[in-house]
Amino acid sequence: MDVGASDSRGDGNGLEAESMGPGEGLTTGEVARRLGVAPTTIRTWDRRYGLGPSAHTGGKHRRWTAADVARLQRMCALTATGLPPAEAARLARRETTDETPPRRAAPAEPPAPRARARARAGSGLRLGDVRQECKGIARAALRLDTSALDELLMAAITRYGLVDAWTEVIVPTLQAVGRKWEDSGERYVEVEHLLSWHVSGALRRAAPPVDADRPGASVLLACVPGERHTLPLEVLAAALAEQGLPVRMFGGALPVDSLVAAVRRTGPALVGLWAQSRTTASRPLALHVASMEWGVRGARRKPAVLTLGPGWAGQPTAGLRRPLGLAEAVATVQSIIGD
Image 1 (cartoon, rainbow, N blue to C red):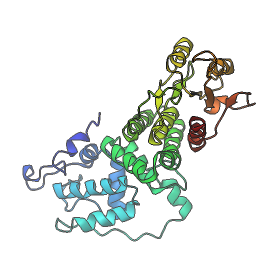
Image 2: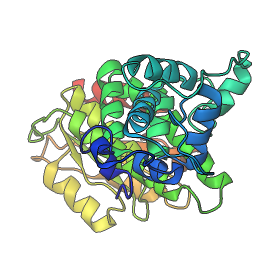
Image 3: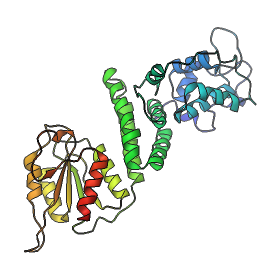
Image 4: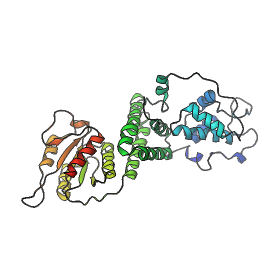
């Protein structure tokens, strides 16, 4: 998947110094492919921060040595954590002082206005005023750096918890990637897909195992028929598991018959139905689920039904609850299960 970038991770610098004779090295394009960044990014780092080749090799094209590539790799690793490029370059140069010094010192630059700094954050993504972790995740996504994505996502979840990490780190980054895709035509689709996939994986890894076989105390989550936007429902499932609440997650586009059968077989205390679009949200379906009964005669129970997602926006329906946001949804489930 990481074509051109995977071979830069074997020995820590992606370039065997002993294999190069005098005057040999990599071109800027070859270095860019090994590091998984654009050639223009490397040229910008050279021009602004003095991270260019250590020596001239003669001729029109410059060549990068193993020490030069190691310095650039350190720059990539530091910016992936969300560190501003100027500070990352300073540390990369300082940490490689035992190697050949940079070709020239970084030119002095006046501090950029705050608005301009925000516009450049995340390698062209319009992130705005967000947590530092968003910028690191965005840069890793644009580079298609799967290892960095996994590490940064799990670090954010560990630091803030699932709810806050989702609301303050993951959602702003996903929205920025979505805007980048919309503004660029068909470009960056792979970035959005990769980021969504790794967010989904991080949520599953972060959710602790919880026994779902607790009669009358479990939660059933599913997307309505025709709805395949599962990620917001996945984070709710993970957040509930984090609170020790048993969840059965059925994912995207569950057919009506299957949804009804699942409710009857498991007898959940609560059913959450996600709809991203008004065209998929079905109030008759939600009301039908809310009217279902199970249990012995004289002590029959019905599930509480949460209508989740923007597709349910509009006039409220009696008997259906519609929490706004992840934190409210978790609190609502806790109150119902605790009743």
